[in-house]
Image (cartoon, rainbow, N blue to C red; front, side, top):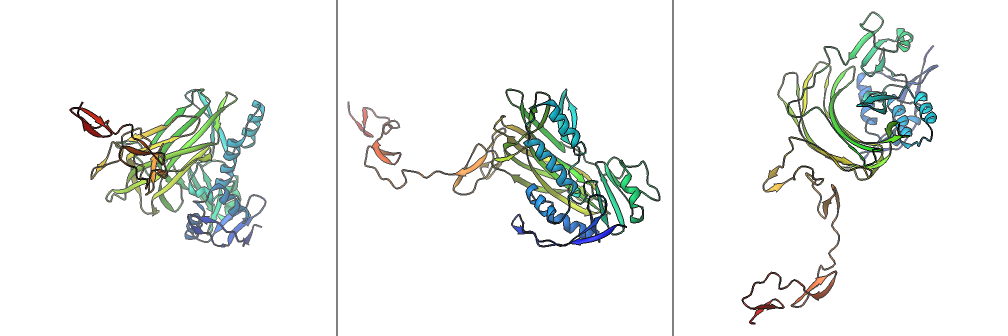
Length: 407
């Protein structure tokens, strides 16, 4: 008999300036990993709102204090460990991949092999346990990369054993959402793509920095959510065999407009959004922005980037740029920059200026307040003979200390 065990623990975390309050989690604990149990869809939404913006370290602390491991956290921890590990032999690498084959996999692209996540990444993965299971009211759900299935609690044992989405629903198993069926919302590109990618490889062909951004619909059994994701990602070719994530001091910048439509209504445009990390020591820098979210009855039918300007790099590679309909823009004589300029569209606060794409403090002027006599100028805080004082004066005769005199 499965038991529902409430767990109440306090943890203090700050997320975008807000504190996560103490909250009861209802967990189903049996022979397998604990399953989150929600009394309503609204309760599940409220939980996601609390945890979806946590960093990995914050998420680890939050879930461990409550005796739960989400599919999202487990996959993130495996990728983080992979990025942090130096493999000395091919056997060590193969052993790591085999041990974590549920969460990572090898793919081949253009003749190159890469270790990537085997688990897709949307907010609902924070509801699912390591087996992809969660529960809302009287329904047990199971999450796959290409959709979600569900069953009544009375049939939960059968649901737990299913390893792929069935071809059709029946009295016991219901296909809630499937990415490749006719009800999946469509995305289309007009001038920009809804997925944009650029990759830079270092001089020794051992390190890459990739930059990409995309819009996609998050899998959710009761809600349609459109998300824009922006990534700067670093890889290393381990043992000369396969690319794997590697931690670097990543920097990047994204600015874009996204348009989308809902239920054949008017087009809605999301204003420009900018994100600029400074020296992030990780294999990936990622920002996710929820553009729109509706109930199940409404349908998004298009989304695309109207314009996009982005750059990203790491110390091992050069700067890579993405540009789509992002020509120089001028408003009231204020131009926001040419293409392939790291300071393009970077607006710095008062007292700072843009250098290499980052806002840094303007250094103090050592000559501020220093008054020099005629023929002298302040250099590095001291008054010295001005070597250029006659350089801009044109005389019929000659210039002496900035004054025209006859020959």
